[in-house]
Length: 286
Image 1 (tube, rainbow, N blue to C red):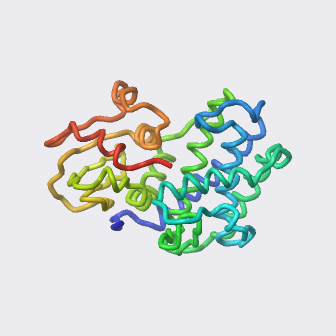
Image 2 (image 1 turned 45 degrees about the vertical axis):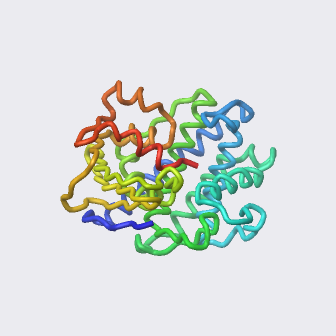
């Protein structure tokens, strides 16, 4: 994995991400309180609305505990054995929803509101590059606070959509919110989520231009990926232009690629535009 910095102001962007998270927490809490049936199917095929809510609550608990140390029983959720990053996260997700039983799930909205505020309070004034201890990602992965905040925002937005689809309630993901997720979390998480088997022998350079920013150079070369923000000029095989929300939903398999293309949300160009679908095929989504 190799993540290269960008020319954007990390402090300003981090504060914007914190502000977006501060705004999304009460929305998500209200959505969880308003969901009429926690047993209903959600936007995640294998999970109910309550399962998705429990997963989001576990995410808030984990990231909050990185600073408050509230949760210590990592052995109960961490998988054993040598696994790929995606396999590890999938296993953790499956176990973590069990931290919230029937009674706890009735109060998920309150839990998310309290832990969201605790996370923002505990991280107030810390530098964006502050390292965050994340045992669920593995010993070799220590994201920055900027990445962690972007991940909490990402989980809130996408799983809010999953809950809303199951509960038949309104939910929106705005372009600025999506833009912050892409810029803050994806430069770190995309290389980690690379499917090494599919990337074996691959040599492709993607110019990912999110309309209105950010711009990412995604280079996949024989089982490794490098993501660079605002990279200097270079030759690319494929250029992908996308609106921020459209790319976020396609990247996390919430909307089919063909539907977004039909609506003009994503366009491919460059020397080999037909390679565009390979990006979502190479980068897995736990």
